[in-house]
Image: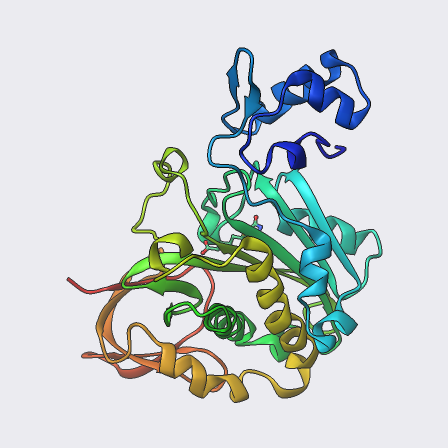
Length: 326
Ligand code: BTN
């Protein structure tokens, strides 16, 4: 779907008359009205006041490809093959996967202002309101099969934590396998999806969702404790473009080198960020609940769980979730 050309003109939050908008875009008032309708369809509140025109109260911080490109490190810029900034999509992970299947190469980044069917782990929906949070997916190709990618999702969590620290945000923690949390509330999540040959050439999409300024109207659909960058920032929160660039500055080099070095070089940093280190936990595997003490992760990224009955066990990822025991 083509982008709504009107949106950047309203992003500042100032009133613009219908005629001024039509003149700026060289289109008719009817065309403007159609675009305003489309924007309302995205859940954006457009205020219309007779004699003043239209505005988006409070304005919006739109994603801007040029701003992101300009804030990339040389290393990240060299690894990026395409940066796609979409207005709306079902899921950036699904889109990146479609593009990989259509022949796109490693280094494709797909982001969107809104996801209509954002995917979370364990079949959950990822709440993805328009122009408020970050939804990004990075595509990569690997050659040594899935085994060489063990621990990648944990390393992605570390990369996200680094990117937030680089923007002056307070330290976040990680919850195995890869939730990004702040004081017990979820700030972001990571979803890895893979296709191809599990023992040979495979394509992977690394999806990251980060709550930046979650509106209350969207948050009602979230069924767990959550927070956002706006709430955890001591001063003015960083903009979404700066955050997106910082994420790519960490993620692209990570993805480019992971197959060679694996999770081992990331393990110490992951352990230092572990929100559940030595805490009593319950592991929900679907079939059963397993209570024990979380003892960090091994060099492959597997959870080390100490249980009363079986001692130290190693648990690999998948459809498993971890909760602090009450
Ligand atoms: C989780 O459940 O914690 C993982 C959430 C991952 C959400 C991101 S948003 C960008 C990408 N596209 C998706 O559909 N999901 C991931």
